Length: 77
Image 1 (cartoon, helix red, strand yellow):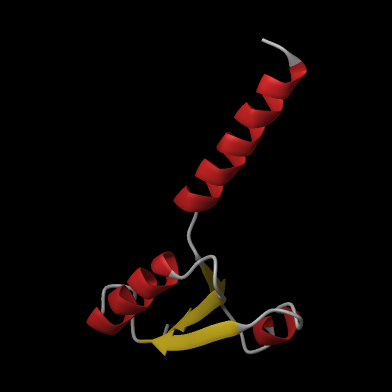
Image 2 (tube, one colour; image 1 turned 90 degrees about the horizontal axis):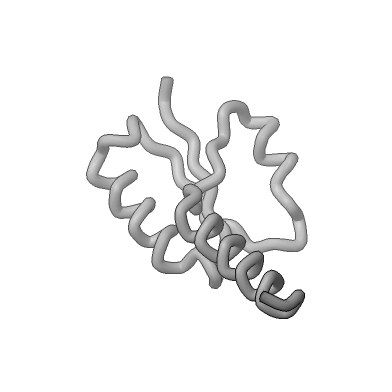
């Protein structure tokens, strides 16, 4: 295997990692909003819990649009 092949494998592994990890940034406090990158577009939601139908729909959209924009959510505790 030459060096070019290793780069392809690394790129593939990076892609797989990004697809597997959650596409939603969890917000714990109002100050977490300040830490979001200002040069990116975010869709932000607030939900009663992660099992709610609304959160599940939000997570599905976040997964489908992960390459288009970023998603962040807070959960009532």
